[in-house]
Amino acid sequence: MRHLIDPTDLSVAEIGQIIALAEDIIANRAKYSEVCKGKKLATLFYEPSTRTRLSFTSAMLELGGSVIGFSDAASSSVSKGETVADTVRVIRCFADIIAMRHFKEGAPLVGSQYAGIPVINAGDGSHSHPTQTLTDLLTIKREKGRLDHLTIGFCGDLKFGRTVHSLIKAMSRYEGIRVVLIAPDELRLPEYMLHEIETQTEGVEFREVSTMEEVMPELDILYMTRVQKERFLDEEEFNRVKDSFVLDPSKLRTAKPDMIVLHPLPRVNEITPEVDNDPRACYFRQVKFGMYVRMALILTLLGVKNQLAPVRAEEPDFVPEPPVCKNPACITTIETGLKQRFVYTDDTHAHCKCFYCEHDA
Ligand code: NCD
Image 1: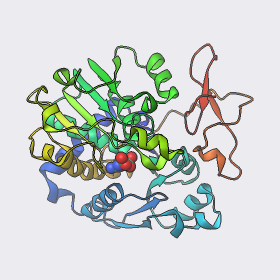
Image 2: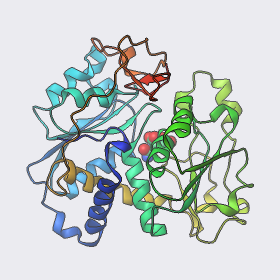
Image 3: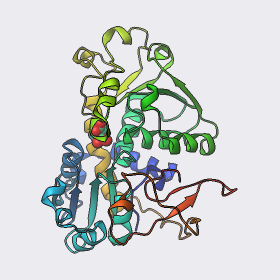
Image 4: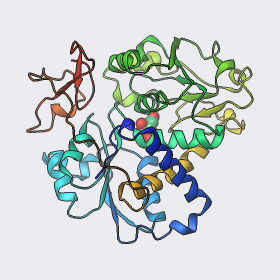
């Protein structure tokens, strides 16, 4: 049985299979309308979401399956103090597959250890969002015709934007990728991601810049993001950076005619509405691709299509005497009974990171 907690849980070849299946679904929709008859998806959303939850729901309904679940923490028993481990052990009695969104980083990973059915991470804190990544990859494949030899600019909140973290990890595995990070100092990528880029992403060119204008002409993809208000501990800091980058038609003047603009949505004011009419604006088409790729993912994890090989049984190299994770958003801060676990991030064992939220020790 396989889960999708981090985009790298799937190999490049497996991602290719899921994208191919999504493209077949787009071309032959009727063929898939009953393939999940009798199967149930549980959407466990501990954090507000409209599009991701409805995208999962629509995906399962399109496949002829059904959906149960909750859409905020207050209406679940987490408000009574139930652990994630217990919740999934209950849900597995009702459902065949789980999509979980949680405000704590690492919560879906904990869920996957107890569920006994496939668990999909639908976004955990500012950590990871692998199904948005599949959405982005399918969109790029459909719009650009390839996933390699591309220059992609990530703009906005690279610190708290989980869609950015996951897409960087995923894109770094293709050939000829150049990544440009466009963010104010306060919203730079988190340390663990910068460390990962330095050590794990050979062959990918990374550059940090402070304006969109200076890189616009070289980009194939501009990935815009919302400043994640809900993750700021200090409102003044949010107000200082909230309008850092705004894409408007004048900024697009120097962009390639076939550049694409992506955004996971919701947008606040980082893209002006006038941009929506530009043929390079792909963010609403991107939403539709999200449903198709989730259909493909559900079919794959349920074993209806695309048989995935079982994951390697080998355990990661856990640090024998782990420190206490200092990330206040880590699941270890609330999950009763969950032990601290750290893994080494280099061969010399000089660095380690939390197994759940990936923050450095
Ligand atoms: C994103 C998310 O939830 O991380 N939205 C989404 O999944 N479509 C981006 C965001 O909230 O800004």
